[in-house]
Image: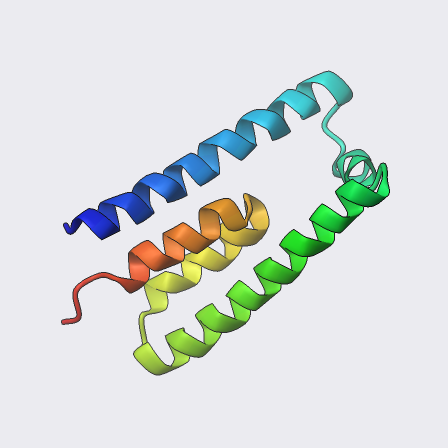
Amino acid sequence: MSLLRMIYLALAIWGAIHPMYYFISWFLENGWSLAAMAQAWHVNAATSGLVWDLTIAAIALTVWIVAEVSVRRNWLALIAIPATFGIGVSCGLPLYLFLRTAPVR
């Protein structure tokens, strides 16, 4: 595995673990309500801006993944879409780059 692929994989793992630490901490403190978490994301204009920034980035990444998968037929790369929306762009983007840079067979 190339150094670049190892970096992408490390970033995907970090992008999965680090945000989840904060999400789980929040849930343990405030209860397991997704509605309450979504409300907390919009507590002020700065957090709302960040939510929209990440949402637009996640949609753009999804469009890119779908477009490339339809051409390259790398169906495994579709796993980056639920990773993006379930964990975040910090996991989904490096995961997709890791899967995309696999040697062509």
